[in-house]
Length: 384
Length: 46
Image (cartoon, rainbow over all chains, first blue to last red; front, side):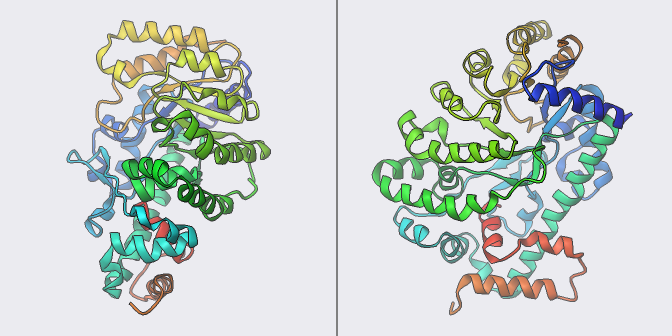
């Protein structure tokens, strides 16, 4: 059953991702914590029981039609918090909802060290600042690297891999996102890993030349080595942009887009597509995606109006979205279906559109009866 | 600390991998990162 469904779903998906009308409008899911809650347990309780984890994470697909997923598992080895209490990604009190407590370990006056040698700067300055014991107690450090390896292997090699295998076998669903690699714009690296929200936005204004020099160095150090020829154009490489929603169009054009254009053009040169989240609002930046090759991006719409994104880019890039998580909490089922129908009428014709949500379903309740109603409506009524 | 941190981290990784008390397959051990810079970037984003 799974293999037949897999073939059907993939053939349909292939057409839609090539900007053609398939047999139906595909649905894309991003179900993590909400999925394990739907399955009746928590990440904390299922972490050491792979069978339980896989069964719980798969349950939602018995109830909701999904063609392809971006996420179907946790992405952070959260059990490391017992050994490294200062880590940024940990489970909340409910044992399921992932909490990200951003640390900004770099100081404003350290750009010269970063520019001189990013690897040495991270190892000599930032890691000792975040994990001082690692350099004070060699035996503790040895146990620490073992725990990092074991936690990552357990999450990616056991829990996630087995969940993916089960979803393919039972439901014919596979990831649209390539495992083992992600791209990052250099400005997002500074924002996410070094200076945080306030620090980065201040640095852009107060020391723009240093920021620009750091971006060039990070591009060479972090991005160029990842740009190795792809053996297969599908699944797609994922990139989660975080800072663009907070900078001006001018700053975006000067500091973000030059690297972003290079990433997208490289991906297009591999005959692949970049899976890219339009995190926050991008309404004044959408036109940039007309400057890169047609169908080189799969854009996951977040806070923008899906009709506006479709109007500006619907003929040029692949668009994913249409269901707002907040609406599913407050609207009636009838209103949700009505909104879904209007999205299909506007975005589906011509292909190049996948129905999905604006947010990752992280917490219990993010998947609810309205989500199920919308996804199943799309599959039943979204025929070309 | 006298040693360069990347050298220290490389040594720690090597000693952990060679620890006979650590009964883990190679593919698990590889998840600590390919080298010291890789490990340091993994730790930065934990």
